[in-house]
Amino acid sequence: MTWEMWFVLGVVIAMLVALIREVTRPDIIVFTALFSFIITGILTVDEALKGFSNEGMLTIALLFIIASAIQRSGVFERLIKNILKEGQRPRVALLKLVFPSALLSGFLNNTPIVATFTPIIRSWCEQQKLSPSKFLMPLSFATILGGTMTLIGTSTNLVVHGLMLEEGLGGFSFFQLAIVGVPVAFIGLIYLGTIGYKLLPDRKAPTFQKQQTKEYLVEMSVGEHCPLIHKTIKEANLRQLKGLYLFEVIREKEKLSPVKSSMKIKEGDRLIFTGLISTIAELEKIKGLHLETGSELGLDTLKNGATKLVEVVVSHQSSLLKKRIKDSYFRSRFDAAVIAVHRNQERIHSKIGDIILKPGDTLLLLAGSDFNGRISETNDFYLATSVDDPFQLPSGWKSWLPSLTLIAMLILVVFEVITMFVAAAFGVIILILTKILSPQEAKQSIHFDVLLVIASAFGIGFAMQKTGLASTIANSLVSIVAPIGIIGILFAVYFLTTVFTEMVTNNAAAVIMFPIGMEVAYQVGANPVAFAVLIAIAASSSFLTPIGYQTNLIVYGPGGYRFKDYMKVGLPLNILMMIGTITITYLIWI
Image (cartoon, rainbow, N blue to C red):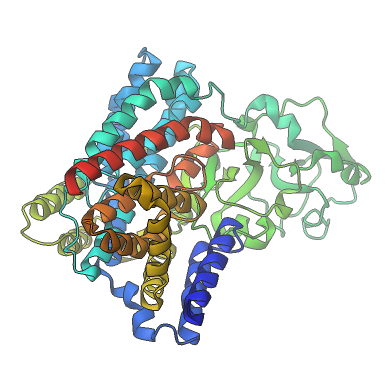
């Protein structure tokens, strides 16, 4: 092996380790790896940046906008509310849920589907006295399965499609993946409704109930001779407490939240704190500040006409990651106060401001009137749902135009009138011209960090090909499994892709494995399309961990799951997917 091959191998391994250990954001890690190839001369600037003009990557960007418009239209809410009815048997309700979800995911990004369905399913489960853990993981898995059925089902399919175009293979037709995707998705959905249903935990999600508030809320009243009277919150040093955070002041019948540092304290004020309740002694030392031990302080007590209780899940793309809550200026930025944080199904026992946020953290917020408008301008949360407010669905022709636009796009693509990229571009133009989305809203709906990962990964894959590393790995792989035959080679490629998917991201896994798969195909004289199909489906088959796929992380907290639950339910599904995909691929393309 040449030094260039050793260098590329070392960088790829370092990149994988950094992604697994979550050293920083995935887009920064992958782009840094790509940049190292530029400064060492392994890739020219043009070669490194080829991925940024790849048709598949640009199509993904446009589809983000279209999916956002459909999500805002209220179609998802109407659909799920028609599916879930009162008095249904749980297993029947589950099957009625997963099949339409999978079908919908074949044509739309599955992240907004799961993000929209999750709070409605939780509410329905609460009304029916059912466990959401029996429904939310199947919802995520169903949308992953559905994504394998069409060219636009997942971003991974479009990434592999773009790689095939660069390889001169012509790319996938719109329903080519359905040859494999439809049968394996059907098998997977039946599994979820039968064996998988039995394996799912019957567990209540950790909710922020009234009976739990004593664990993280405390009320102090300001007495007649308290020295804090007429002082601002900042002057009283109530922003610098070691373990507690002041998030609301109840003044007679008025409830003031979020609390500004300039607010002056008055006699009779009820100060509501959250955080590490064991540190309450620092407040009890202040003369005239009394602990209200007998008050029934429930979450409903905290709301007023302008504030509401909201649960949010921190997203992979959030700008809040790796930051302490107090360093992110959460209160002023989102017009909301953090009351409690759940991670891995347990409340974090710490001062709220000192908690460093991670993807999947569930936050309970007391949100002000500007909250909805402010979060709509960010990708910081996977879902933001009011605990008790009903959903307000749009009405009129604008609620149906995004869906009709998508249908028109699909018809044109299926009959090969125009390419998927051109259709998506037309769709976006229509949505903006009709003011379904403003240019600013369209821009906000694009996940630029995801696109940076994909575009950078294209360059890394090209470096593996250019240096000969992909060929060397392929040669080693073939020599090891050749005695087993072509079935063994297909199994090895599928298995490696699945492992990479669970460790890093599905798109990065596809881009890393694609050049290896192509070299394997050429060495054994097989149809390279077979390996492209195999890699596309294997890269999307992330069922073993909550971190391998975004939708798995969305339902992780709301479903009350533990890490091992994904392995327990997902491993048999992964095996079924692998057997089905390899068998059909072998029969059709080998």
